[in-house]
Length: 153
Image: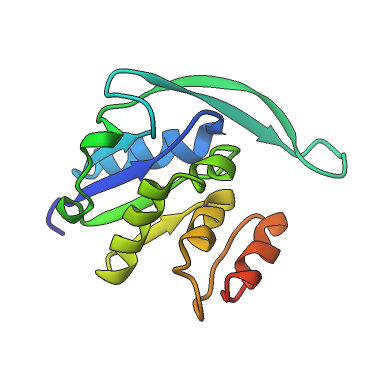
């Protein structure tokens, strides 16, 4: 497969493994990955969170690492990318409120480019209105968001 250019949209308190592992894995197989965050520039960092299931009714949340962005959100042109990745964690709760994020997601959907959302990342897809009639996987608490947006959970 030819190398692709992939956009990864993240935010503070993105799930640590959901950003670190895909970012590094995609780079290792030869793709270019630009990790961006609304309101931040290349070289700045987002804080990550580590979520775990420890026998409580929901997951626990602990501080993760700092993840350095390698591109600037305000300079992103979605048409220049081949695919989109939206990791989960807490970030999707608020990046889905950013209209430019939603416009980027809609571009990928309309152009039929691959979109990978992980865990809570489906909240962004639901907010963008791009999952009607589509099967989606997500963290169980996001299932109602997927269904309300017309997706199949």
